[in-house]
Image 1 (cartoon, rainbow, N blue to C red):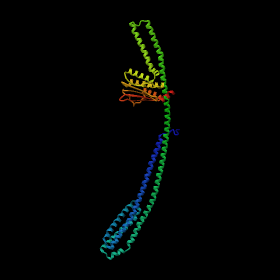
Image 2 (image 1 turned 180 degrees about the vertical axis):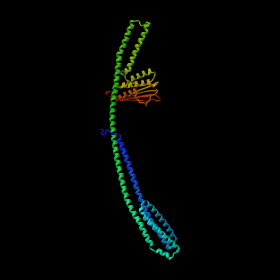
Image 3 (image 1 turned 45 degrees about the vertical axis):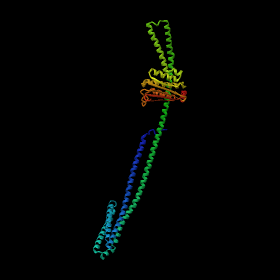
Image 4 (image 1 turned 180 degrees about the horizontal axis):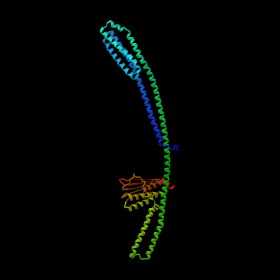
Length: 455
């Protein structure tokens, strides 16, 4: 993937995210402000409706008081006085509430309410005087004439006109506020929709940037993985080549030691035999030195044989893998005074020479590590093979191995691991029960033989 924006990094996504968060907060603030504003409008509408209700209740209370006043004057029934007093108190209470509300909200209406209040107070005082006179007259005709007059009708008409004017203006305000409230609700909807769309656009933009960055990183990771795989393959091939060169050098050195050094030692031995025939080597002074020469020569021959076997066991070339591993384990454990418990197949395994060398070197290195580091007393070696696979297990009862530590510094372990990887096998090191270390080598022979043919 081509990087169209070489300067792109995380700050672009962070800036976009911060912008989106800021817009969300701003839109939330605007929405909350608009909501609070519409709530205030709704509360204002409720207050106007409440005032309309109280105006109607005031008219009803005054009408009830007037009816109770007329009923008492006509019948002198004291029950009408109870109704009159209740209606009068209710009318005064409602009127005081209206004065308080209009004093806070609509001060322009206070003068009309004051006119209504003065008229009601005057009329209530007049009614109270009429009741008092009726009580004194006890049904005198003079009191009844006051009932028949039309002054109460005119007064109610005037009062209704004042209150109706207030109610009419209040209704007009209610209608205007309702229209304004609807307009504000529509504006709120537009604001919320716009903020939502803007946030969606920003989130889509952020998502596209993140997706683009993920794709770019994936492409870079794939390219890096491909480079790593290529380098790993090169290192693996180099490792295989170095192992092959190393084995070839060991084989060449073993042959040179066998041919040249072996020839020299044999020539020395023959010459010494000829000297022994011509000179008396049994003399005391000569016998000691002669025995020392013979011992040193024998030690040199044995050293040559042991070095050659270490470099390239002749058993591996002549008798096969099983015999070579058996000899190596017995020889090493015998020299280190270790008890060997071995399990080998009765018949020799038919494997490629390169595979046999790799398995033998792993066994050789594992047993050598046990001698050097394990402080063990028993070594168990098991070699099992079929036509499909080969399994080598080497276990000790020593002090064990820290399996959590990195193996970067363990060149022997890495060497064994790379040897097995080179022929398509696996190499594992694990704890043994109850203590010690177990090495397990597995090899699929089909794949190993194919790799060996490629080499």
